[in-house]
Image 1 (cartoon, one colour):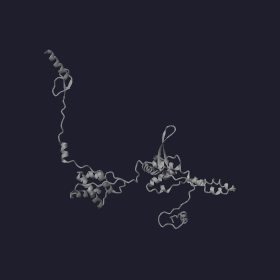
Image 2 (cartoon, helix red, strand yellow):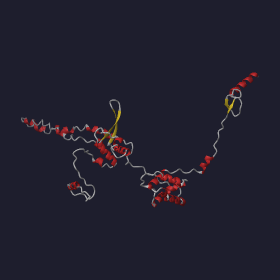
Image 3 (cartoon, one colour):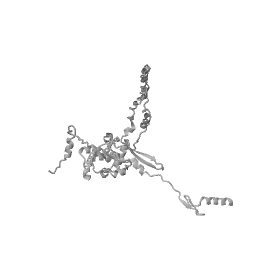
Image 4 (cartoon, rainbow, N blue to C red):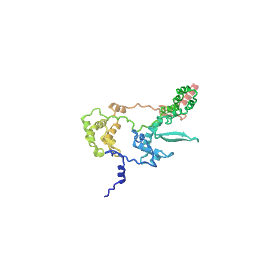
Length: 349
């Protein structure tokens, strides 16, 4: 008797009109009298928005004017972190629900305003006002000629007034005409230009798994042994037989490039995500993205060992007369002293 029956729910189900479905959700719709927000199905069932973005949009739509809707302000009242909230806001901005505009105050200060639109498609494709169709009722003032039949002295003019299409021409000059140029510029300029692609954008195809130049029996055996023994060093990397056969070419490509087994194991298993759901996919990604370069050839190594040309540096010498430093392979006198000695010798001659 510890199981309590919800009698209120039972009565509510009994009041649902029509037969109850055998599967799926059953709606119990109770009218709201206060504290409610109207949300369109275009947002609640948007095919390209994540559930986080839809929830953030509903929360923003329920807030009053002037409420803080920044990333930190929303994170203070939501369980989602700042990264998920930022991604959701980018999705809403990409689909037209959210817009950030820069505005200049009369004081000259520039601020950023956040604008949220509950129906962005209505901005792109505005409908003509519903009051426009009743405007043909304006010809009703045309009954002004109706008093004319009271002038029955001349019944002939009456049929001439009936075919007069003057009132009929009035609906042709309908006021909605000036609405057309207002709606034309709006679609020409996009309201929002997404800077970051949404999470639902198509992703680039994955790079293929590296292949060795020749999968020899020795490489195949070594790669198979390495993958089969991987779970002893990292228990979370337990692979099936199909996973081992699919990853063998990638490991063989690493072994062909003279990579050591301990280095390969460290590169593939260090710092895995927690929890690790698909170890084979992680290994395939790391085998492809962290592939080391091919080892250099014999000619390349010989070029490194080849002696490089040396440059001869002329040493400094000290002049025997003025003690000035100058560059010369042999000791002696500097240029000025040599010129002075040559001038004295010429004068003495």
